[in-house]
Image 1 (tube, rainbow, N blue to C red):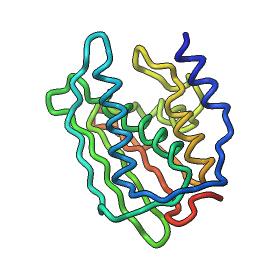
Image 2: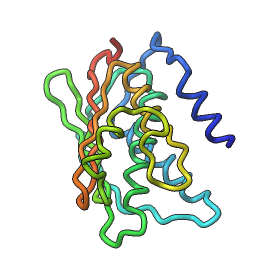
Image 3: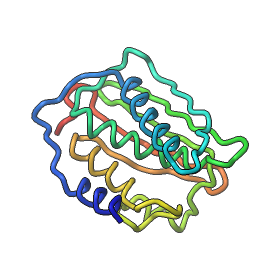
Length: 178
């Protein structure tokens, strides 16, 4: 119950966009991955994290409020990792590309995927409308979407049942704040 209250509170918080900072996208993804690993390691029965690959130019930077961005990446990476837990061939890949001033981050897993009839609910990013795992609060995607939108980014999901899911994050490289 306390995690539901905390997630609900976080979803309703305004994000201070007055002091954006610059960091590399790979550093932000690595920080988010470290948080996911620490959370999995702290469970009563620790869960082994599947392999996670990062395909990103080390020098690619983004200017934005960084804590909300790391939280969004953390939630998306956690969902991808949890989709692969227990799968012998489970893996997660984060691919970062840049076209002009737009950075695209794809967080891909080869988990069970989302059935087509449920994908629309997932892409609505409403709390509790799209959680299939036990132990989750149902706020993860809603929080990630809210954080990204607040800093001028966007989030969409694509999925193929039996093949996996891709979270597509788009950010403005310079001054990601609207």
